[in-house]
Image 1 (cartoon, rainbow, N blue to C red):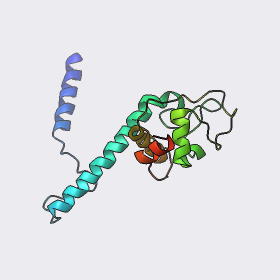
Image 2 (image 1 turned 45 degrees about the horizontal axis):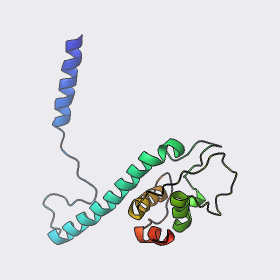
Image 3 (image 1 turned 30 degrees about the horizontal axis):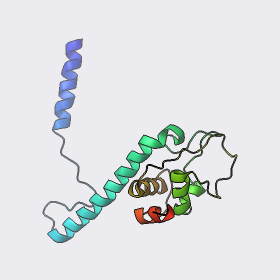
Image 4 (image 1 turned 90 degrees about the vertical axis):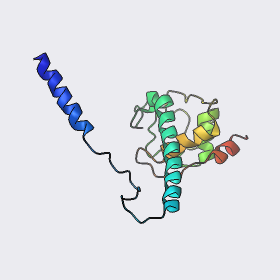
Length: 157
């Protein structure tokens, strides 16, 4: 029976290895007549956007998931949901002050949750901007991204 399992795993591994790599969205088709310069510029822009999105997702997974959960819905009556949150979707400066300095925004009334938001004062503006942009475009949210200069200005840096 053990030999059968090993054989099955080897067959599946071989089948997966034979699968062709998927084309990434926005990548030109093979043999496309798109100019190389335009394709390179688009690839560079995509790389910057995906890098910021990856940083934001990493920041969220490493710092926010324990309270707000992987899906962003929080824990009812304990930790707030980030989906549709007026704090997340509102003024990015207020969000920065709340997350980094612990200054409660007017859109988050005191006493609504028995827990206190941790302060992430160690977070650099670029990392905070990536996190905030991730929050504003995840969990069903659709708000403009936040840039590092706006975070730095809100923090008086």
